[in-house]
Image (cartoon, rainbow, N blue to C red; front, side):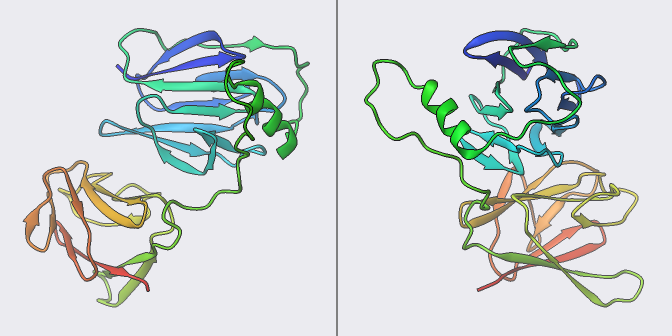
Length: 250
């Protein structure tokens, strides 16, 4: 079962096995509590969606970094290293560990406010993690987030079932949820449609669609999506009675 391993200065503190969604933050009540002033009260969360693990920033002050790149939203993959404040959470599809509470303190004194870490501090932290015998190179300093494949822009055109009028929805996230759930990026309707029916994921300069759940299958141009499907300009997506059109923006 997938897990997150919490580390501080290369020391393993705890292992957390996924049983459901996981919240990460400084205050008690989170599934992973990191009592450090660089961590916001509600810092990040990992949503489990049909076997996919979606990391999301919860509006934290210092942000989250995956493999030294700042992200707002990211689908976790084997070996991903998530920097939260000064701690590292390493993701893997392991089988051991248990989801239990954490209330560890490090050298930082706890206070009620989140401490801001500037770019220089992140640079020094990243440099300190290089092996001692590695060549002395300039460490990579995280830059402000830029969506993967920044040149790739696209939108979905839907038709309102009430008025029949088209609605345009920009695909601004790396992962865009199609479904009945209240916070879906692309809302759809239908008794047999899933709460999370499908996702459209940005991959570099391309977009792919993946079916996630529900009795109504996801179809692109009349063909059922088995795993993932690369989207092209003008593709028609149907889920139940919902019709969506994928359009690239040049």
